[in-house]
Length: 129
Image (cartoon, rainbow, N blue to C red; front, side, top):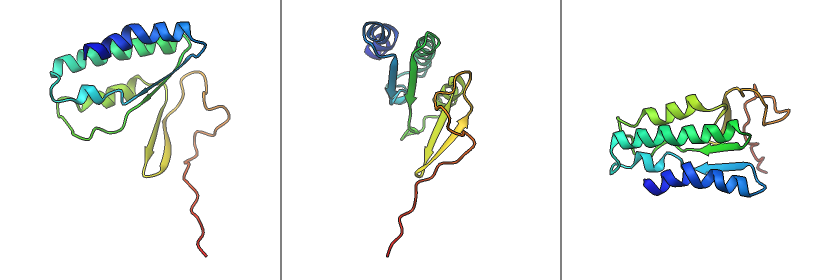
């Protein structure tokens, strides 16, 4: 957990400052926080600290994309983590059964450009025969 904390709170900002990229993709952001070996209090402390740093990066102009699948194992004392992350997000896109939904409108800049955010996007079905 401490390596993850150092990565988010120290190394990511440094890497973004030294590279030409202003894009951060945090995949599986909540995975370690759902680990049963991590104490509940420590998981929530780390969550608050990490999300504050990611928010600061976004507010400074970086595009921060956090990708979080639903947890494989539900822990009652951690159920609020995903909800808290969603509440902190500027935009939430949910992929469910091959259907993409925009669940939360953009605050400020529309990063999807001219995409009509009221549209439900579903994959085309192939015609057989």
